[in-house]
Image (cartoon, rainbow, N blue to C red; front, side, top):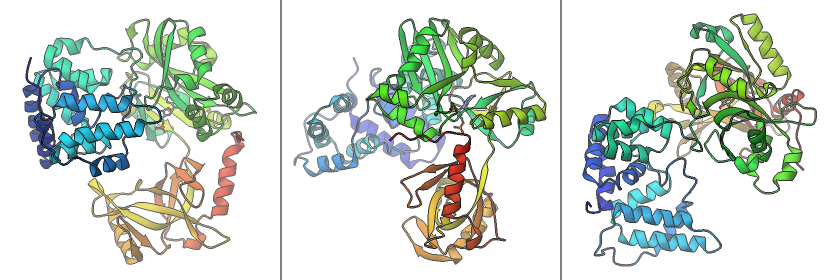
Length: 533
Ligand code: AMP
């Protein structure tokens, strides 16, 4: 057995990787490190570099707050020098113990575990350990870099490593398999039931013409539901349901579990769909209300009575042991439609006639749904990817708002004021109240011009924010108005993006809080308002 690797080596690697901006250098550094450590340490080090304590599909969480770390730091013992240097294994053993703590004294127990480990840590070790625990690694190791480093260290082709990770989800495990068993082991990796997979995503399309131009071999248009995406995994009597963010939501939706056990004509499958909350008149109600179903874990039965759900299915990724993700949409749909009741399938049409698409869209909206999804008939299921194989088409609403502040940009937008605080005027008080922020919709040239214009009307500087005299009016497109306690206005725009500047308008011509309230109420014409209380 190889000697345990000191955690110091991993912390120093993080420092080195963070200080270089060169991708290839990062890959080489990580690859050399992975080759130098023991096989049982490979998954741990890989997870650490990815900034994770546990694999994504692992439900355990650390629950370490900044306050706990700072309390632990305050009471550290004098001597940081111990005879035994901290090893990678020690660190992960402690993380596991921290995640296992529960009950009334759990904070004290976590604190003491943290103190024990921090007492043994040098400064650089403590720094990276703390950053990882707080979810703030940010050492410039994006997933692609890590996967390429695993490829380089193991000699497995990069594409194979990427595919294995896409299917398997646990980067630590993939690293370990690649290093110890090579390409042949990765080739055997397949979708696994009860391990959530990252859902395929869609790009936004402006209109059906754009979609038809992209999809040369035909398009299926399905209703786009404003609900919550779920993936249902079943094998015999076991059913597990995961959300779009891969959390296990099985216990919050017992009626869907029941459906999965009794209505689907297959004993082993992974299928996908959307659950929508239904109001008294049988129409969908807003997404926010549906989310209450998922947050509740107690009183499930009474909540279930108050918020009935409807399930619409639209994809099959595995059925009776056969993985379908490499098959075209048409075949996956055919298989899905054989195993689920017809009324549970997402309504859809296959056409290249724009007028038909538009009238189908109108039906979707009339029935209280969000718009359409447009799926290429020949496309495979690309796990976790957003691309042109799937488009979403939603009619955007528009509102004129006033910019009252802007944040300095980072990354590509550094040097520009790029995140704009959007406000409407309260007719009663004259005050401008923020209803959202956005950096979307602008060209580089517009960013530059608007940065200059904003600086010229600055009223004060914040740490990252410049506050300005409310005078620039922008038209924003958005998908929904939500109630939000975050802003004094009480509202927030969902998916706001600037569609154009309205220099022909002054701040008094822009939207008002009262108008926003009306628009909010209007949203419910097609949807039932839902009141929990
Ligand atoms: P968006 O959240 O706006 O990026 O749109 C993508 C989301 O739309 C998916 O993650 C699903 O939750 C949801 N959705 C609603 N209807 C469908 C459908 N028919 N096919 C795929 N996704 C859908």
